[in-house]
Length: 193
Image 1 (tube, helix red, strand yellow):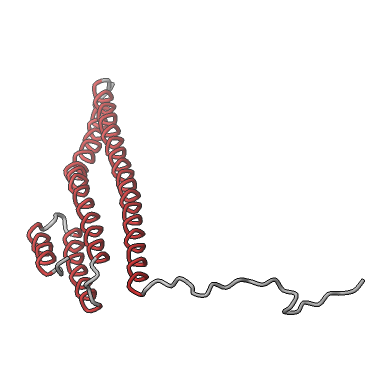
Image 2: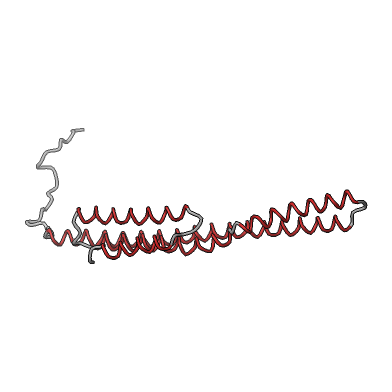
């Protein structure tokens, strides 16, 4: 059997068009820019949905724990009252009162620290933070007129705002004036869209 060798003459001819369709640079830039905007919007939407689900799960878990703590406190106090009323001697009654006092004290002290109030404030804060970040960066991404210097300034202002926000979150309460001042500064100094 004779072996065939490949030569240029044996290869099938590929027809090459005379002129390849090449987009003009501004069309290519616009197409890339539009695709990037679409990708950013889809990612922001997916991120917002995932974040809301995670926030909801975290709040539900905390609420369930508070209800469980409430139930344990009520049950333990009820048991101590029952033990005190059915005690045979004074020592058993004193032990029941001590047990009831400790459980009631722990129960009340936990609720005096205000976990429900903190949770109530955390929801709007988290929603505000997510909305601020998403809206802010969406505006930055979609603004074609921003130069690299503008982008650095935008990043610096955003970092300042986040620093104020996170500093205020580490305190026992949110300092509304600082947060409002930081938000106003961002609105005033943000480049026009």
